[in-house]
Figure 1 (cartoon, rainbow, N blue to C red):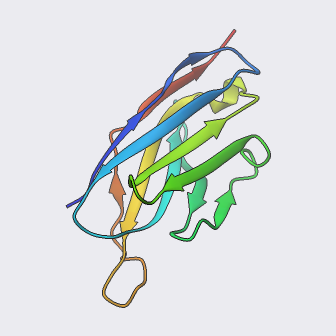
Figure 2 (cartoon, rainbow, N blue to C red):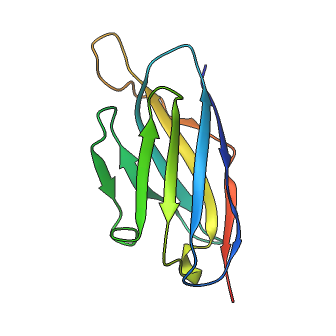
Length: 121
């Protein structure tokens, strides 16, 4: 099993910054990890991905403003968010996959419980 717990959400004004983190607990090797968000009344969307080796991918809406990173010793991932906009308001979820016996990501997604980010003046 994998347990994921997000932290760092809160209230911030437009143009401000916030840093999210995700603490993991597992006896297995973590593969690709990601941040997703689910806005009120909207769809769940991918915000950023990071591979085991540090390769990143960002949604167009996050590119240039957000930065995903990971600490493979602590088994934590982070999301630095800058120049925040009201449309960034959402519950942010940590996502993880495990490495299978062939060295590739398994197909099972694990999720944290989410942390609320509210951007408003």
